Length: 69
Image (cartoon, rainbow, N blue to C red; front, top):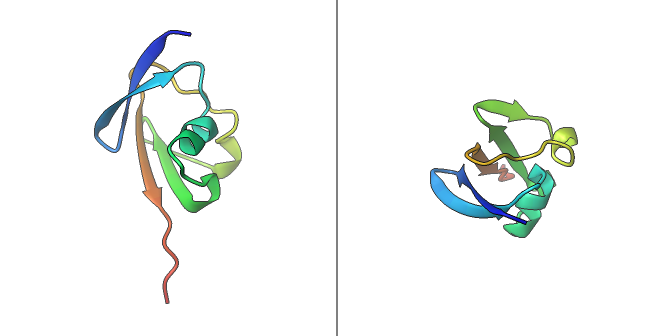
């Protein structure tokens, strides 16, 4: 499998493609239910994490959801 680069939160990262957003999150020790994801400028519904594929050069913004009160 060829290695490719994506940019996540402004940082270049090597990833193995094909890779869905959910796989990427798990590989970074992030629980898919605990984050909000923007993929190439578009908000991604959690229901799409498993099927939305990353491509070389894609940009992700991943924000952890923090409960407060």
